[in-house]
Length: 342
Image (cartoon, rainbow, N blue to C red; front, side, top):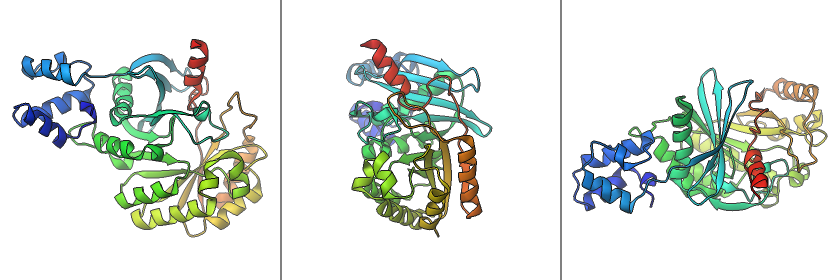
C-alpha cells in the first residue's frame, strides 16, 4: 500500500515494525498530509529512516500538466498527471463560505451518461485513496487557498470505487491530516442502488447527491444507461432508505436539457414521485459537450421549472455556472489534452 493511503494506526504498525518509536508515525503522517514531495523535507526524522522510506515507499506526487484560471470568477482547473501517465481533473471553486475542490475518483468512467464528457472512452482504472487525497492537498498547495469543502463529482462514479473512496474519506477527515468535516463533503452518484444502501449503513454525515436528471424511466433510460440496471423507482426507494438511516436530506442533481427533461409536466411528475422525501434539487444548466447533440435548456425554462418545484414545496436552486471559459465541466480538459497529444 502507498504510505499516504495508510491510516495513522496502520502507519504506526509499519514504523513499529521498522523499530521506530510510536511518535514517528504522527510525524510522517503530518508531513505527508501537508504535501511533502520528498522525505528530505522531513527534517525531524533520522536520515536513516528517511532513506529507508524513500527506498521502500517513494512519494508519488501528481504533476500539473495544465492549469487554467478563469478570468471571470477565479475558478482554477487542474489537469494532473499521475505516476502511470494517466490524467485526471480537479476544479477549485470559490464561494462566499469558502473554497470548494471538485475531485475525480476514477480515470474515465463506465457509466455512459449521454451528457457527460468523462465517460467518453470508458473506464481506464480506479484511483487509489492517496490519488484522491493528492488532488485536494496539492490544489491547496498550488493555489495557496485553504480548502474547506470537497465534492466528489469529477471524473468517475465514486460508488463504483467504493472501498477506495471510503478510505479517502477517512483520510481527509482525519484530525491529524487535512481535518475536513464530513458535513463539508458531498458525494455524487448516478444511482448504484446496492452501494447507496452500503453507504447508508456507515451513517456518514456527508451530503449524498444523486444524479437523477429525469422524472421517469422513459426519459432516464435514454440519457443514463445505469437506469436499466437500477430503475427510477428502485433508486428513489434507496434514497428513502438512506434518509431513514442517516436523517440526512438528499440533494438531487438535475441537468436541464432542452426538450428532454425540462417541461412543466416533468417537474410535476418529480413532485409526485418524491412526495414525503426531504430533498433539495440542484438544477444544472447543461454544459455543452462537443460530441453530444444535447442542448441546454433556456433560462426561461430553467426558471419556470424551478418555480414549479418550489410551488410544490421542494427547495430548488440553480447551480451557479463557474469556469465556463476554461473547460471546467468534468472530462473536457482531459479529453482535449488527449486529442492534442495524439
